[in-house]
Image (cartoon, rainbow, N blue to C red):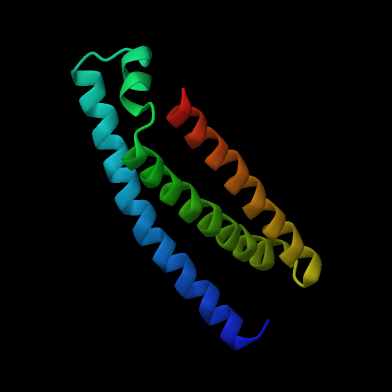
Length: 113
């Protein structure tokens, strides 16, 4: 792998880590507040129904996770299993796509519910 690609992947993973740290904190805060308020699943869905802020926040969350996770897994598989090359790159790209599609589908389902 070229040094430039390695540097780009490193920086991309660190940037997505910052986004994920913020998103996880906000997500946990919302969960705790909903639990304290005694909200039911129906009440939560009523609040997220067609809420563009909710959709934008969770879309960013999903995009960051779908980029971050495959880069980390790629590093683990390279270091621990000695895997490298095009097959690994393709597998990680497919994993990123799968995470992106599943995550955005879930976020939109809650938005549209």
